[in-house]
Length: 297
Ligand code: THU
Ligand code: ZN
Image (cartoon, rainbow, N blue to C red; front, side):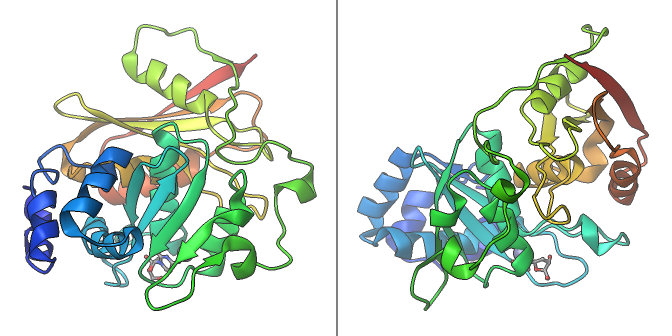
């Protein structure tokens, strides 16, 4: 089992801990499929929501919060029934706008795994305004159920009445809606560029058209990617660098393992994420940010 979970596992009900230990192996990155969830429900005898609140104590361990020292965990259940953990991430010494909220982390985790919608979200702290706005961008987002400890379950539309969302800007295919944007790059020999192209083509940038992605490569060759996820209110958008950093942490890797970092952006974008991505990268690594502009077709 991974060291980061050892303390928490001992606080869980014994039957649940016994079922979880084999799952929290070295490869665990916060994703449990629907069958594993069903098995944990039957092993522990807990109701689904009770199980999720117990699992939030595990999700919280993924948090990196050198500024606030306030650790938040979130679990998003995708339309498939699989669950995706996330936790807040803050970058030491850099602007607070680089922070990733636990809810954003969990949702981006689900999106990276091919989910096209979210049914339920469990969180151990009330979702802030920025997260309510971020969740509202998801396809069908207004109907997502939000579960908090000792609180009646409510939908996103109850947490965010009179919402301003993608429809207000004429966007009919919101976040997580399956869509693909074709991008082309001359250099097809570099696997990192191919991976960045794939993710950028799946990114969500209806406002700026800056379809973009970041890939971080570790010394052992493993890669972690993030896609740009814009928001109708602009500021709650999630940067591709933040999404990639969150993924790396979720997979229990350290920043010192990064050997390459690539930002790929569409030539059709009304803006560039080069400066904000470099700023975030410099907080965690000395490697230079490679910048590629791909042709939008
Ligand atoms: N935080 C979340 O992760 N979700 C919320 O909605 C509330 C706030 C995090 C962000 C930051 O890392 C820390 O808690 C303090 O705000
Ligand atoms: Zn938040």
